[in-house]
Amino acid sequence: MRRTLSAALLLLALAGAGCAQNRIVYAQSGVQVQPPQYPSYQGSYTNGAIPSAWLPLYQRLRADGLDGPDLPALFASMGTPSQDPMGRKIKELYTKAFAPKPKPTPPSSKPTTPARPKPLVYPGVITAEKCRAFLEANKPAFDYAERTFGVPRQISVSLLFVETRLGTFLGKEKAFYTLASMASSRRPEAISTYVAQLPGSTAADRQSWIQQRMEQRSDWAYKELVALLKNIRSSGEDALAMPGSIYGAIGLCQFMPTNISHYGADGNGDGVVNLFTVPDAVASLANYLAQHGWNKAATRAQKQKVIKTYNRIDIYANTILGLAEAQGYVAE
Image 1 (cartoon, rainbow, N blue to C red):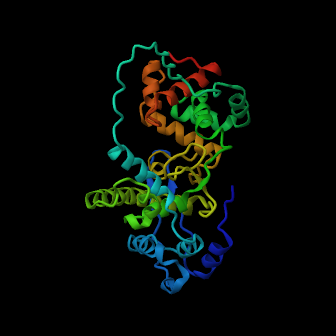
Image 2 (image 1 turned 90 degrees about the vertical axis):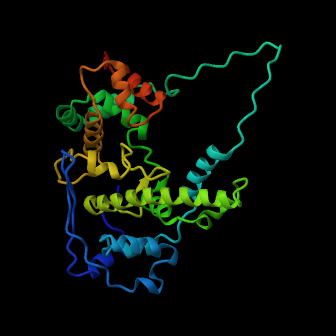
Image 3 (image 1 turned 135 degrees about the vertical axis):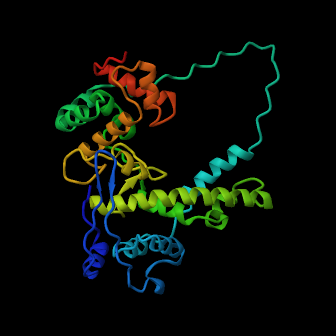
């Protein structure tokens, strides 16, 4: 993972004389130390350096004191916003709200085949060898996290395996671009390709519904984008290259950026939280579970409930516990 600014960002950073490098330190207690604000960028950002589609978002960030020599270069380098993240989300919400409900199936005299029971764990995941090797290769990181937060290493490594296959799959999207695209999409015309696919979407009441949901999701994405920008400036990651999920979760432990200030932990003592490093990712997920009630004396059902705060699906928690137990962990 690259830890330096891209060439374009570096040139702007060098040009911005007097703009000292600011860093945010997230303490293990979750307390965020705010850096001084960047001075307002004085470049000609309205003359085409930033595509017009990004200007409202850029100006919003600027009004909130988040401008800096890096920001115009980021927007100038990203082309135009993608319809995909907001479009996917609105299509999902719209379908749930307005799709016709299936008609009940009339009773039949023919014998029916019993439905297959739902699997209790993700198929093919309960294999412990890779987890054991990863624990051995990163023993100091897991020692620290287990000692500090009380979460067994088998649970931590199993969560990393389920989330990102131990860091080998970090998402196909670019996190900053994804969240910026969502934050800048506030009106139906911004996702016209998706809206055109929604039955009945031209009706006035449906347009109003779409508009309202887009504004809600845009505001959510803006908060996540602000948190990501702060973490990028702290960790030194390349914002244009940082991978993420389809809605902007990042790192080996797949945190949404706003979770970093609450649960991010510095596992290697370098003063910043970088979730693309094993020590910080392991310490942060262990801190998250500890703050959500992980307790050594808890029952298996109680531990499953804590894991489900990370992902509400039963099969998710079952898989993590099952994978940990395959490594010798005993859940009471």
